[in-house]
Length: 349
Image (cartoon, rainbow, N blue to C red):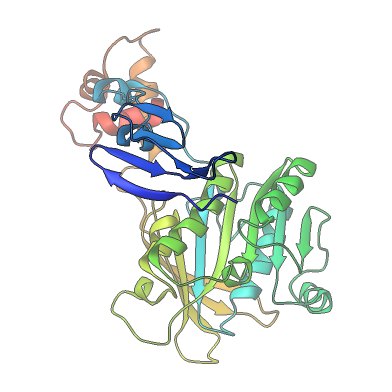
């Protein structure tokens, strides 16, 4: 039997000193060679330290200059609920028993039907609700309360695998079978997370997996989560976990009751693709959250006003060639309407 190898560091090399025994004369052999990139002499192996490091990816950065980016037509994000819930990863957090699951269930059914959500249009499609803290019986009873007819395009599941242990594959299998899927709701986030320390890195890693899944398939994934009991000036700081959770998602929503059991709550919304807004909600007799008020103000300049001015400008000509700046000067020379090149670009490109 050969004894285990011994490691001796020699700058700039790492020497792996292995003994072997000569079977004929029962003597230990070995020679120390000169440090080369990779050398094998007898039972000695010398490897240059540079060879032990992982080779870096030397591919160049793929950049785009500002002028090209400003003039390049890009698709706006698809909204499942107009101006509120776009494709990507989102989180809805609230205190226990505040009515998050009722809201999630109603949202899944409403989107599947293609009906408006609080006067906002929806993109009709298949929805998947992973109701991991409920039973099939409870979901059935709640369906009877919130709707008279649940469509076949809304699906429910009470069990699934964990993140990194099969969940992504299960969701992708469902998406393959239902390619028109627009919304997946996971209730709750904690039910699909592996057991590990609650650190920033772990939080970000887990949510990044779901973020990539949503972006890959162009769907919205909504995570139901909890709020801390501690009060905070910024309600989003009450979201349970590290700040990585809020940082990894595209939008965050918090549902906070005015008073426990009051049936009135505020839905505070913030995100990358949506405006900050606060929705005042009231819980109806059928456990459906109804809109009382919306803090979102009407834009100063509506897009249809630009269309009217643009149509008037083009009525006397068949073609216009110029930059957004030149066009804005033509249709609003005195800047009375507040039309800017940026607004022109967003509407036309």
